[in-house]
Length: 249
Ligand SMILES: [Zn+2]
Image 1: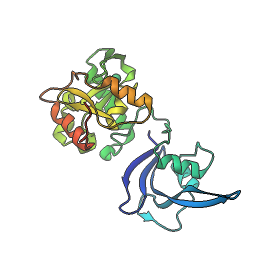
Image 2 (image 1 turned 120 degrees about the horizontal axis):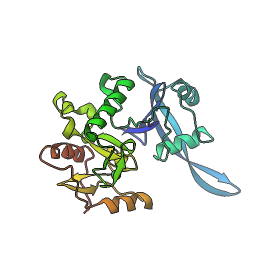
Image 3 (image 1 turned 90 degrees about the vertical axis):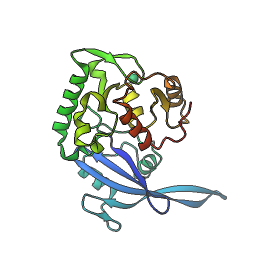
Image 4 (image 1 turned 30 degrees about the horizontal axis):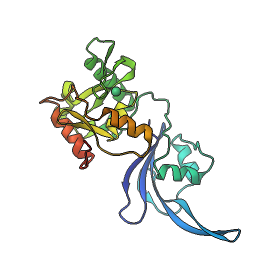
């Protein structure tokens, strides 16, 4: 389960809104920062100070008198890994926060709304979806990298986010979901790092981190075996969802 998920930029200022999820629930927080000047041993410097502007604990946004960050997090079963609250806020704000995984073994990021499903039925559905895509195979190729993986390293990934699929699309099991490996491809797709355009894997965004950039580079241009008349509509939805105007060749 992803613990810190970026939702949107606040309409004004530098605020960013994140959903923090834990095993016992979720809260939303808006984080921003102030650029403060400080003087140390005669030199003047600047320091970014991160703060929580407001909190959403399930009913409404609270702008004043919200509970201490640590208390709010404890209530949903999350605790800091970093030493201090400020480090934690900074890491979340900058997207460097390493997602903690709670007891649930399967990621929920893409379909976290669950549209009324409980976590248990969601996971049961995921397992049966994977089984149907595996069709009695114990290993199968990942549609993104093309490598063959054992079944427990494959994830039945929705090409179009499940929570926005029509009832009909949800039932289109064979086309709306495909097997992607848990060795990275599933996350790269669901987080919009890459997608499939006219049957080819294309990076949707750049990363300054070499390991990510190289991975995207090596996958770029691969032919995706899952692209066809029936799946292209879902891949196109994914492309538009991530607004990937600057697709790199
Ligand atoms: Zn893969």
